[in-house]
Length: 591
Figure 1 (tube, rainbow, N blue to C red):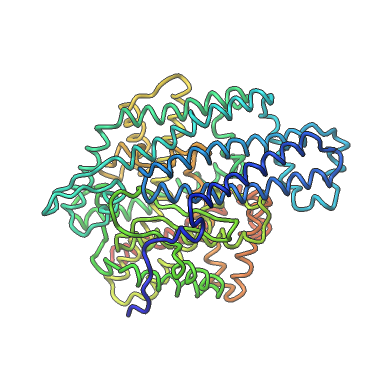
Figure 2: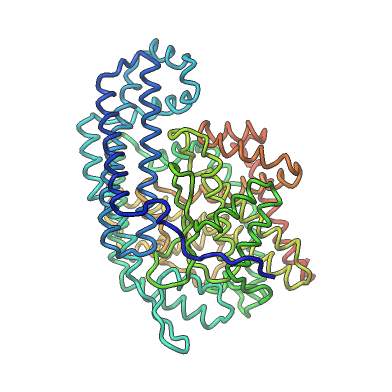
């Protein structure tokens, strides 16, 4: 029974009441950067106190800058054509570039210290909070160019590199998908993608075909965007002496190549059981291979729809199973307008969570369509928001956690919802429905994400030799999908590279394998939560707070006592997921 009513429109006014207030905030942040640069130029770099002061300032600036950048992102998401928001985006992009330059200025100061001065700095008690970070900076210094070259690259990136990423968002939001569903209706890309889980197979196929057709018309334009982003990145890496495009994401994710290879090796070993699930689901729809437009469809119509208010109450209740802080946090988010979920056209297509560290808040953006996938997306993004909440006591610079851990809290939240729904299911049909949803997550992380990784790896290899046209991009995507799904997927979208926004991120390439990492890591965390009971929440929050202070290998060893550079660690999580597939097959006595 529905207990509460929650707004599906977020409250942004409580963050900045007027455009003038935001302008003042941006100006204040700009002055903070000016002051830092002036201090850095006269700082006595052998004095740990002065170095710490610079680092503290960088952290404060980052918090203020994130507040403005997140607000701008929210404005554009709710209305991608808002001219004021686009103007603000340009200003915050320039400010971010200036901040990046100020960070590099301080990094260069640290990098020039003699070995003796460096050891003295590390040994200073004042540097306890920054020891890991400055060690990482010193390691990255090998990629640093001259001040003149760094400034040139930063300036060029605003209207070049980053502008292409922003143009991608605008271009995607301009696409309208026409699907004859009784009355002709124009949908956004996000709304069309939501129809993948529609109970009517004809609707799913029409949405799939209409989306493919719309993307085909613009594929050469998207190919230009992707090629220019990759071309800029490769040229920048070349100037820095970076030979392999994976070097940067591995360091940014604070994991080793050995760890990444161990994870994919374990995933590949377990794929057979998931192809068995896909083949069985295909039979439910009368096919030998599962068609791509049937993948997100429910295996049964049980529990097909859930109103937003009921979904919110369910998430609050299940978060509460792991601690009062998680429960109170979720309730506060829903009751205080942190979620934009209204199903309307004109919105951006992708869900996200924006953190507002200055005010200690977050905002979640999505298009809620009443399906279980939407409930999971909502829980996923609230997981990100809870990670932001856990980091509130942490200084600005140590709030950064790698992408490999960015999906940990979000995926844990999904698992909490799915497992709770399965435990509460009474009938065989309900259990099959929930197992199907769980297995979709496994297939996405072990097959779809693997396909994205393979595509991006091969695309960058070819891009080094020149422009890669749309037709070739389609072929690379097709080959990656066939390999990752072990040929068990029918009619996969060869234009997935267009509507996957992660390929167009200008902050970092390869925003794919962190999802698989976070998914498997979350399996281990969930198991610990069920074992440890009430004590879990405290240790979980401590793990999240430490996520910006050490390598991932160190973090897992510290909190779980596990070595993630071996396939054995990953196989533990895979075994839990494989058990879901076996239970799915066993429901119909197929084993």
